[in-house]
Length: 548
Image (cartoon, rainbow, N blue to C red; front, side):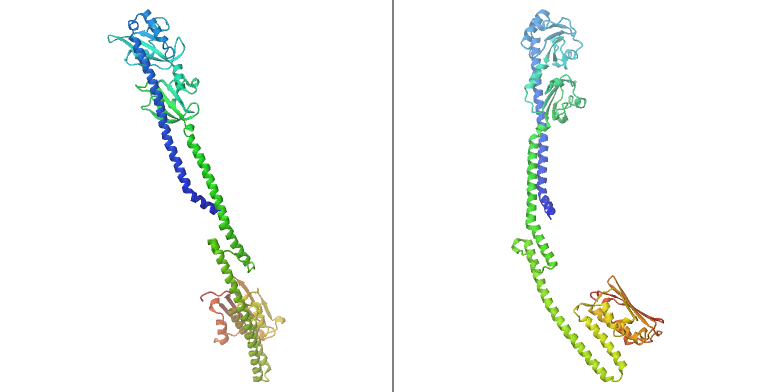
């Protein structure tokens, strides 16, 4: 019962649990989209800031190229000018360099040897071929040994290419700018060149700068458009990564990652709180269901069962004492009490009726015996001097009286089969001389079947005494029976008597034997008139069939 109540409580809570689960799933999906958009915005902000820096360097190079000493190609005047300009930009860019159209050094701000060949640098060749600013890849400067990002711009005079002016964005300065950004806890910002070499990173730049982005994420560098993805970063953190790929407008790849655990921490905390509250609510509901079930269902049911058990075991005064106002089970308990009161009343009425029946049975038995006594007296007066006939007739009256004595005894519900047979056979033959053998399990016959068998046995016994095995001293009779599946199977076997001669017509006795047992007992009779003696078998139901 308690388990069923707990199950019903859980079923009642299922809609609320399903609603909470749906809300939690919806919130997480919305948060997932929100974090992806936030990561893309974050990467776009960093990318725009780097574009602004590179645009400033472009302006610097354009301005420096317009200075006559630089544009005129005079090495000494150019060196002095570049040193002056570089002195103001030392924290921002590296060496300022001017190359001729062959990629050889003309002048610079660090006094490198004139004629140093830079024609092998890819960014120099690209700068000579375009009017736009050219950004090189991650480079370690030859003289300063600093990591820089080369920036080059073509020099032209009268629409003719005369050389290249270039510098390098100091990556340590860019790293410091990256550190100044407010990166969320567990987040990351990565900047790489078009080849995927990381030029700046926050956090752990010492572990990543100068290394190459893993191959599985390399397609993001040259992706067709910005986007976002959930990845496991090289530091082992699961992040939602927003990225800005390299393009004509954006020469560097930028990615900004937001740690998934950090992004979902408020939802996780709220979910944990919700789970705890749900568990507490379920526990409270279960405890309430158990208490309510125990107090208002289980205990009353047990009280009713205990009362019925006590009443069944003989405590006829057992009652639940429950009242209808205690609810439905109280009404059931009160109804059980009413039923037990009615059964007790009916039992008393039945006992009184049984007492009256017994009194009437005793009176009837007394009157029947008086009637039989009168009949005996009449017979003696009528057949005076015929002692043998009188004795035979008296025996039959005694057998009939014995059958009534059994039926009218204290056990009015039926008669014992063995006692019935003895009461019928004793007046016909002394049962102690061994001529009559009786065997079989004791069983009780109802009144209807007892009267029928009494008449049949009396008729068979009378015939045996007159014509059969009991009519001669050497004859003997066996009466045996067995009970199987609510059926009585009785066999009457005579042996040692005169030869049996079958009658050509059915007399009253034969009809009595055939029709005495009611059809409700499903009688099956076999009468075997063999020369060595009569064998009579009867098979009847002990419990009569209803409706027959």
